[in-house]
Length: 110
Image 1: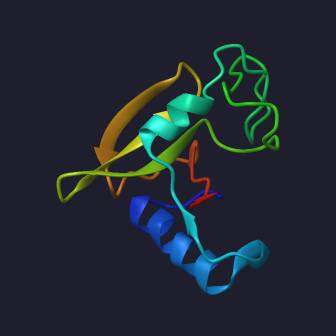
Image 2 (image 1 turned 45 degrees about the vertical axis):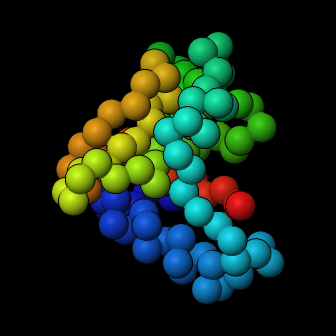
């Protein structure tokens, strides 16, 4: 899922929980620590654009086609939030209004 910004990523949780996506209503956005736990420096997953020079370091159990980075649930002050970049395995803080097609969101369940 490619949201336009952090706020849209957070509102998507509400939508999925309201719709009981896959039969559940306890969806949430992961933390940076959770993303770090699944980072695979030898990852072979291709992102949405299928660029073989930029392998995404995420487990092969995930579907192909996601982004390079994923918004986290972590806010940094009022205007910024963090995301994790799976090409290189690092986190970054940016404005919540940041819009980049390489940044997606994945949901997990409690």
